[in-house]
Each structure stands twice: as structure tokens, then as C-alpha cells.
Image: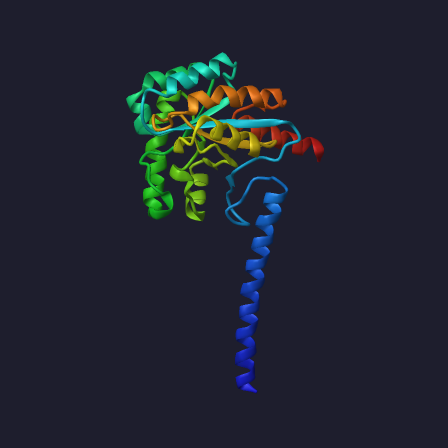
Length: 254
């Protein structure tokens, strides 16, 4: 009888593990199916990939970590298509220190500034103390240049784990990723970049593009993307506007 109890106990433990994994998987599938923000875990802070909204809105975002030849032309395009106050830039603090005049132009034009951290390293490989130092070091620089608090963080390479989410949350940051990756940093060709966005875009989408010098075709693809999305009835908003709007909708629906 004792031997049977041990075996049964092990089977029960195995069953619990399997059921837990199954529940987690179902939760992720349901989340993606319903097009709501994707969670790293069922509990705790969230990494936002997209936002559920009844409005035809998208958040166009750009990462910048190095270079000086691409940002200004991209800003010129955004200005031309009247997207001031409607786009979010995630910039690394070392780059911002080297190009404060470009950051000032972004701020004066009303573009939203988010943090792309300090060193371009995977945060999940760092200790808790190192993660906090990376976020705070960038925060100090960006806050001074932007003249306001920064509370959006796009981690380098989009890398994170539950520790990163918890530490960012403690420091009043929300981790923002993306749902549609233009892959412009791969320089696959203008048509490929345009099609990647247009084939995957949806309401509440967060679109990832780059304004670093390594992205040599972004400035050519961007006007086409903007015009096509406007023709399809999409409205451009910042990440914060997208999130705030969805929260307001939720309260109204309640």
C-alpha cells in the first residue's frame, strides 16, 4: 500500500504540472486571439505588445540607438504628413547625450519620448541591481533632455523576463514592445518593409520601426506606409494615447 501511495503521489504531481502548463498555454492563445495586450505571465506587470480598442488606431514607434543621418529625414517625413504629437520614439540615453539637438526637436514637435535604456544589452542576462541601474541611468539623462518624466521603456532587443517587468514597474515604467515588426533594420527592400506593415497591421497595433543609421530604407518606406494606412482609415496616436484611449473605452463600456 505504501508503494502504491508513492507512485500515485508522483502521478498527481505530474498531473498538476501538466495542467498548469496547459492553462498557461490556453491563456496565451486566448490572449493573442482576442488581440489584447500580451502578458509575460498570468500575474504581475505586463509587457504591452498591442492594445484592444474599438477605434481604428495604431501607434507608430521608432527605436534609435546610434547614428545621425537617419533621424532628421524621418522627422521631416513625419512633419510633412502632420504626425506631430502622434508618434513615439524610444531612444537610448548615450545616443541622446550625443545628439541633444535632435531630441529637442522631437520634444518641441510634441513627439513622445520613451526610454530604450542605456547599454544595448539583454536585460534578462543581468542581475536585478544591474537592470535597475540600466533603467535609472537612462532615466536621468532622458528626463533632463525631455523636460518631463519618462515612463515607457522598450528594452534593448525587446528582451525581458518577469524580473525585468517587476523592476521596471517598481520604477514606474511600463515595458512596451510591438505586435508588427517592419524588420526595416534588416534592409530587405522598401516593398518588403511596406508589405510587412500593411499585411499585419490591425486596430490597436504597435508598429516597430527604426531611425538608427543601420536602417537605410526606412525613410523610403515610411511615406508609403503612412499614406496607405491613412487611406485605410487608420489614425496615428502615441503609445500613451493608445493605452489611455483603451482604458477610457473600457470604463465607458463598464
